[in-house]
Length: 110
Image (cartoon, rainbow, N blue to C red; front, side, top):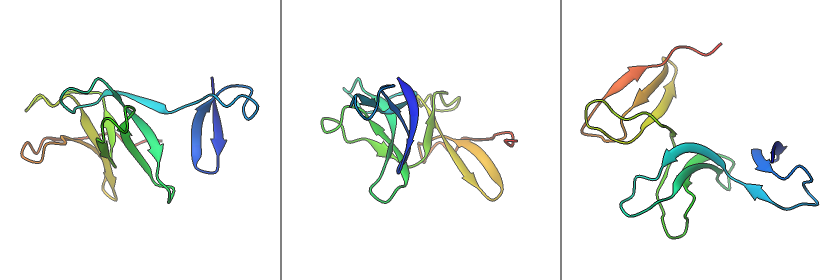
């Protein structure tokens, strides 16, 4: 399996692609937080070309989010993962639980 670039961005495919049609989603390493689901959150691209993250067990599990999940538990509420948000001020890791309000700054990328 190698990373290829297509019209919707980067994807993981067989080294003999397009003759070999074996294609896989790019994993985030974060388990699905839905109760009773043993899936994993993977990177996908919407019809309009925007990146989002959803469970690889779709259509059994319909969990999805726009922000990139990071495999780091929240120190305040023990949420199994944090999400990476970015704006003009920089990048931050934020707890997905709205009531928790945990946030930490990430160093700038060079």
